[in-house]
Image (cartoon, rainbow, N blue to C red; front, side, top):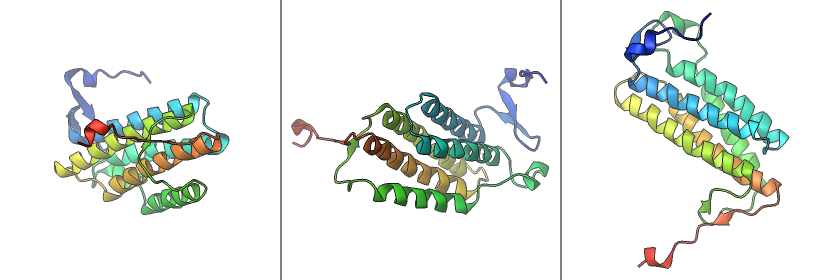
Length: 189
């Protein structure tokens, strides 16, 4: 199978189920943003800065992001939607359980924190911002009338929270304190 098809040369792409749409279609923007998030997470793992537990969790999330991308790329009612694994609400609950477990081992959050600290934390914070962009793209697609699962938005919303907490956990596990944001005095007057 060739990697190129030339069907995209005119600015169109095929969805799962056979429909062809513009590459600027909100559905394509949504699953494209999820693909970008998956690549950001892959970079975080490949950089080698994550501990073994976080690396394993990120790789599990990457697999789920492929499922989410397929979910977003498949309009309901198409033949492909019959065999597709849609994102279940249990994935949202699993992220919440993971967040609670990580958060229990962290010092209480008393201020906004600056992204950074360790390379692992910085990579997870970067992935968090990409996740929030993907979440906005999915919301925009839904608001544009694209029929999408509401669980997709909930999953990305919770994943952003998970990435924030994981970034804090990466710092804590390395013995690096989060750096609180200290507003400039001139911004407060």
